Length: 226
Image 1 (cartoon, one colour):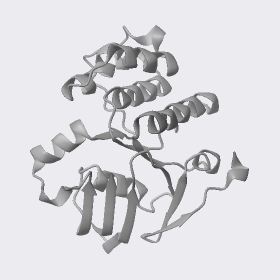
Image 2 (image 1 turned 120 degrees about the vertical axis):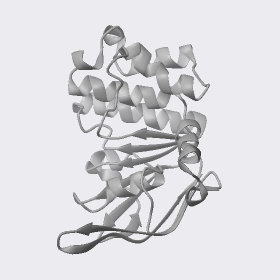
Image 3 (image 1 turned 45 degrees about the vertical axis):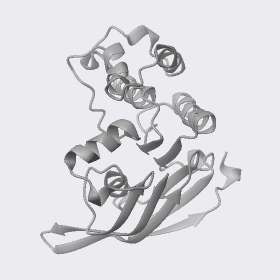
């Protein structure tokens, strides 16, 4: 589902070049669940943005479902994000002129995969039933986060890239969101790559990788943290 080979990324700063990723490689099969951990500023979000086709690497390859991102133009990258990849980032990016119900359906309709029954299940599991007629500005940060998660999952993506998807949620709601992601992986073969600072949540995923000084290391999840 995902293959990343020898990925490098450097940013220009006032103090000179800042290497963030130095030869990162990782792969995921359908249904794989992978936690990405690391200190703040270690490049976790940068890696997700590169895999999502939102930025370009300096060197290396990213293949999603056998398609190399470097060979795609902007329209091709947009098609990958519409048809294959689901993005859950810390910026909610909800459409302010649409209600919660309309925001939830938006991405799935673009992908031609709107399923009213599945969307209703997401609404129930994310606790959004009372918010459907509201607009994003009328929601709390936690509610907006749940709508953003629901919007992504409504399209049934084959690969979900989630950057701290539970960061604005209380522990109970965060656990429910992770349950939903894991159920999606198990039932549909969706691969989940999730950035998290929580050792407890990371331990619930099948694999765990840690990013430090531009390099990835992989370890078995610490089940004692559950």
